[in-house]
Each structure stands twice: as structure tokens, then as C-alpha cells.
Image 1 (cartoon, rainbow, N blue to C red):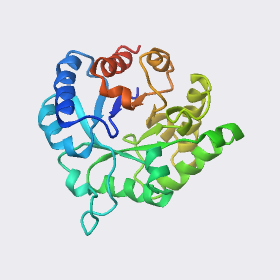
Image 2: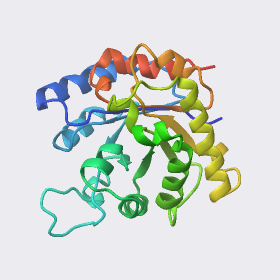
Image 3: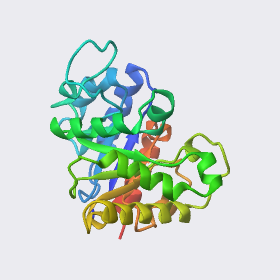
Length: 253
């Protein structure tokens, strides 16, 4: 059985005080829940050190929202994997906002994945199609192409985590298809992993859903057995919401 994974990506939200309050409320709220799942929060960079201290000894893991490809150098404003090592356990790679707004092309995403693994970080690779590609019916092709380009030369094993994080949900560009479409895409991701790389990899790797996760749809998402968890965005900055997301997968089965 694959272990469920619930991730909260705070994006560019929270002040220092808000971040501290959120972490301090999450730790007791999640105590006592099943240990048979992983829980991760990804605060903005300025709050990582404080969050790491507050989460020490708790069941909540810490992730970074992004990182640079180089361990050090003259890259003003960037954060390297060497800085994150020992502070975070996880890192988001290829999230759609990074791809769209900051030019993270497939070669950069691939390099970040490789470097994250080299520094002992566990990457969560985000893939997904945009609204035009959804309308054109080429989402399956786009996601398969991303997986092939991004995972070339990356260590592929049961620790691999893929987030199906389509642009069309969180950016509200179109009326989203039903969640059954997400389940079909997750199955497609699993099949692609096995076809392109290692037979059986698709059944081992965790594939989570990152499309507009809310308290209203979390039960329906968790009921889809092919989906191993969620990558929640801004809604995860509300402690009761995030607890609902965790509970939905903690009680699965």
C-alpha cells in the first residue's frame, strides 16, 4: 500500500506572525491522527527556520516551495539545495507558477530534481496541462511529455512523488472537468511511469492531486483510491481546512 501524502503549499502568503500562529496551531491539531500518512507544509522561505524549530519532534514535515539548481554562487535572491539540506525534508519542483512566471523549463526542472536528490531532499514533481491544452484534448500527451523530459536521469524508486497540478484548476481559466478526469489523469501518470521508465514504477510511486483542493471537495478526492493525497494551495493556510485535508486521508480505508 502506498502511504498517503498531504502537502500544504502556502505560496506567497502569511506574515511572520501569521506563519508562527499557523504552525503552532497545526502541531496539536494533527496529533493523534494515523501515523500511516505523511504530512508536509511548505511555508515561504523567510519562515523556514522558525517553522523547522516549531515542527521539531512533531509529525509534520517541512518542505521548500522551490530551490536553485546550484549549491552556491552569485545568484542574488536565490536559495540553494545546500541551504535547505538539514532544514527541510521536501521540496516542490516544477510547480506551474514556476514554469509560467519564472521560466522553469523542462531542462531546469530536471536539473532541480537531480540536485535535490543529490542533497538528500525529497522532491515533489508537479506536472499538468493548461486550459488551452485541456480544451484541445491533449492533456494526456502534455503530461506524458513532461514526465519524460523531467525525469530523464533522475533516480526513480518508490520514494518518487508526482503531483498532478494542472494550471486550469487553480488559475480558474475554465470550468473544470469532474474529479473523475483527475483520477483518469493520475492513472495515466502511473501507466506512463511504467511504460517510459521502470515496469511497476507507476504502482509504487505516490501520485497526488494539486488542483483546487477545498473543504468542499476533499472527501470526494480522498474517495478516489488511485489518488494518494493532495497538494493544497492557499486553502492550506487555514489550520482547520488543513486538518480536514489530513483527516480525509488519515481515515481512508
